[in-house]
Amino acid sequence: MNIIKTDIEGPLIVEPLIHGDARGYFFESFNAREFYKQTGYNTQFVQDNESRSCYGVVRGLHFQKPPYAQAKLVRVVQGKVLDVAVDIRKDSPTYGRYISTLLSDENHRQFFIPRGFAHGFAVLSGVALFQYKCDEYYHPEAEGALAWDDVQLAIDWKVPSDKVILSEKDKHHPSLADFDSPF
Image 1 (cartoon, rainbow, N blue to C red):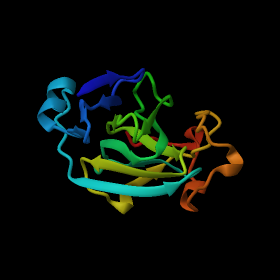
Image 2 (cartoon, rainbow, N blue to C red):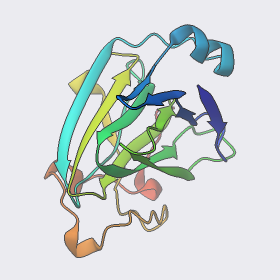
Image 3 (spheres, rainbow, N blue to C red):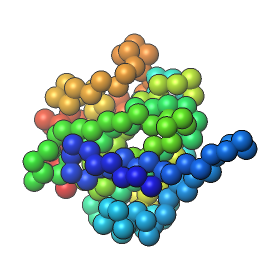
């Protein structure tokens, strides 16, 4: 696997080594020993999740509050998304900044989002099948989120605003200015 550091300390892009031939391809989507060797993260994933969404869906910007904070390793197995991680660590020099990357079934990239980041994605293809590993179980009482359309964050989701599809819950999250980070 190839690990690509981002402009913000913590999130990483993970490119698997793909073995292809006339039959198709094979790749190891995760190897804990190799991931630790290359990143120093000794992450033990305990829950795998999957979502299926259509074009224009924006999910996020979500996180789990301590002590149930989660690190995630996300990937797309069908389609294409813009994946976003926002630094919400109070003492971080990059607090309030975000990093984004395109994930697709063609590039096979994965995105590692450590604890202390809000996470979201926008579906750019007709349909996207999105999978993510979490290093902590989901706890509904620990849910937290930021507004996906916060003007201070100014995220270009690559979807026209009149085409964005949100859950009812994702329509009502606070902006960064009205947010008290638990990290």
